Length: 150
Image 1 (cartoon, one colour):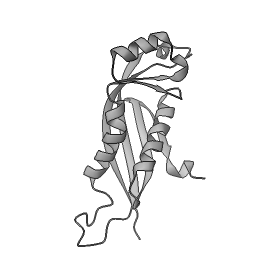
Image 2 (cartoon, one colour):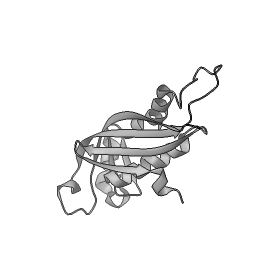
Image 3 (spheres, one colour):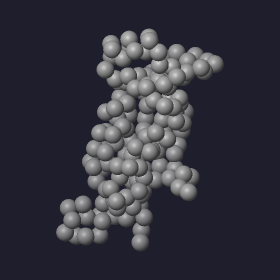
Image 4 (tube, rainbow, N blue to C red):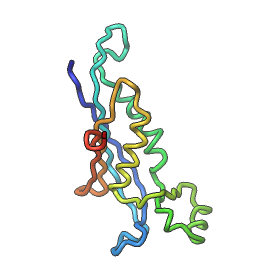
């Protein structure tokens, strides 16, 4: 039994603000995020299957991530619910992609959020192994299934 890890890279643009933060990031600002999604599993060993030799077709992984994460977060504004108020209601009227989350939209919380979404969307024959989210070219947060399975 050979377990293989397969990784696909994505990028998206997103703005956020950190509620009650003591620095410049308390203001709305944007990032060019880079996302790495790694799954693990055994390559299919059925010669009659069109996916023979693959853990998962990269096209299928791309579809899952794009439909459940990228298409939602790309070119959006994300804020914590405690930042919501009358002025945010105006912003939501003016722009279509404003998301109010129940968590502070730090890189650490965003990578956890993404992992929770993707973990539920993976086919039965693969497992979400890790998610790495770069907020800047030199700063990232990582989520590993092995650290989070109790």
